[in-house]
Length: 410
Ligand SMILES: *[C@@H]1O[C@H](CO)[C@@H](O)[C@H](O)[C@H]1NC(C)=O
Ligand SMILES: *[C@@H]1O[C@H](CO)[C@@H](O)[C@H](O)[C@H]1NC(C)=O
Image 1 (cartoon, helix red, strand yellow):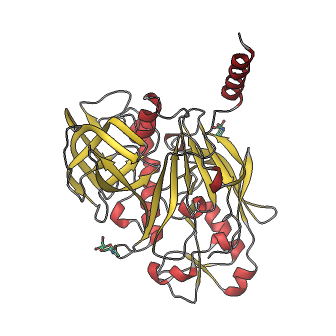
Image 2 (cartoon, protein in one colour):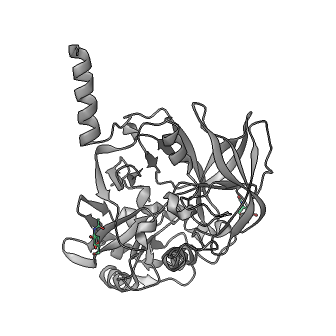
C-alpha cells in the first residue's frame, strides 16, 4: 500500500473508532426563527406541563406498540415560543414554515399553506395520523423531495400531508427530528420500523457521513428573530466554545423514547435539588421543568413565590442578587445555568402576561414527583445557553458551552 493510502486509512480508522468524523463547520445548515406569541394560552407553564404530561404517558401507549398510540408533542397554538424553519417540499420547492421538534419525529405539512404537488410528489397508499395532546393531524402519506438547504435535498422523504389538523395556526406543520421510534404506529397500515426521519434518510442516502444533528439557539430579548441554526451531519464549531461533552442516552423509560439523559440537579455549591435521574432535552419545551419534589426545594432555596398570572416563580431584585447558579450534573460534565440564565428575559415580561418590573424564573414544576423515568426537561431556555448535538449513531446527546452560556442577556 502506498504510504499516503496507509496514512489515509489509519486516519479514517482512527477517526471512526475514537469519534465520528464531525464536519467542523458544517455547510449544511438551516436557519431557525424564534417567535414568541402567547396570545392564545393561559400561560407558558401550562403549555409545557401539558406537553410533559403527554410525553411521560407515552410509555404506556408505546408498549405494546399500538397503532393509535399517542405521539407526544406540544399543542402548537399553545406554544409561546416557537422555533420554526422554512423547509422546501417538491421540485421546484414550495416553502413551508415548520416547527423544529426534537420531541416528535413525523414530518408533515398542510396545516397552513396548502401542499403544492410537483413531479416529485408521490402519494403512497398509506395514511398518517399523529396526536399531540391538544393538537393533531391526519392525512395521506407522500414521498417527496425535501429541501433543507440549497445543497441539502432529501429525495423520496416520507411526509404527511394533513387533510385535517387542529391546534396549528401560525405554522404549516412540523419537522420532526426526534428518535425514529416515535413514528411507530403513526402510519396505517403500520410498518414496524417506523418512518425514517429526514436525518435518517440523509444518512442512509449517504448525503451526510455522520448520523447526527447539531443545534444552536441563542437567547433573545425580542419577540421575533432568526437566531438559531440546525446542522445535519456535523456540528458548527463557530457556534460553541471548548469541546462537546457527550452524554450517553438514558436507558430509563420513558425518557429513552426521546433525547434522554441521566443527570442530577444542584442549586449553588452543594444543595442537591434532584438526585441522579432520567430527563430529556427538548426543543419543544420552553422552560426548564423539574419534578415537583425538586421544584419545591428550588422554590425554597430561591425564596421565590408563585405568580398566578404568568404561572412562573417570581423573585424580588434582592433575591435575584442573591440567586445561585443551578447545575445539571451529568457523568460527562456539569452544565451551569447562571442566575441570569434562570430568569425570563425582562424585556419580554409583558408578552407572557407579567409585569415589566418583575423578575420571573424559568424553572417550573414538571407536574409529577421524581422517580418516574422522566424527571426533568431541559427546554429552550436551557438550550439557548448550550449548543446541543443529537447523535443517533453513537446514542448520545452532546452539550457544549457557547458565548451565551454565562452572558447577561436577560
Ligand atoms: C399570535 O397567535 C394568534 C393565534 O394563533 C394569531 O392569530 C396571531 O396572528 C399571532 N400573532 C402574531 C404576531 O403572529
Ligand atoms: C441512568 O439511570 C438509570 C436509573 O438510575 C440506570 O438504570 C442507568 O444505568 C443509568 N445510565 C444510563 C446510561 O441509562
